[in-house]
Image (cartoon, rainbow, N blue to C red):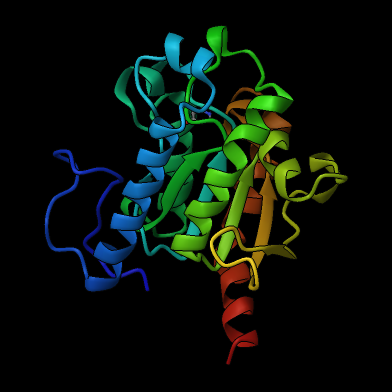
Length: 225
Ligand code: URA
């Protein structure tokens, strides 16, 4: 798992060679999921107003997957997740735990920007959720870090981010690709960096929760020995 150097999500110029076999196999499957979103014309109204799909990028064999809410203006313009102010903050926090973006995988629930950055609608989240789950079934990360309440409530529907941030929870969900199998995920809910960026209290809480990610992974590794 998680060997460098890394890649992004599509066969464009960010996807350069030198993938491990595991990364290449997973990347191919991720590309197929992206193609399925287009082929099935998911959320056509959003697709119409968006400039690019923002499917996700990073290490297809990552230990950590970050899931945001939906692309914003910058992400829509460039087709890459978390590249605006919130993304810069995310990059800084990653550096703080000794990781680069290329070590992890970053995506969002919605793959298209909602007009005027409005909140994702329940039907839109529902439409994209199977594809998000398919991404997780391919990557099989050790930890899924949900950023903000929308992302957290996709996996932990009845819990409030303000109460459970920083607390890892293990969940089991039925696999989409192999219905007889279950996917076990460790969900770590954190505040969304955009919400925390300009709110001093939330900001420090997010930084502290984030700094705990290596400990969460150590605990998982010890449990799996
Ligand atoms: N916020 C998100 O949830 N996702 C992005 O890609 C950018 C900002």
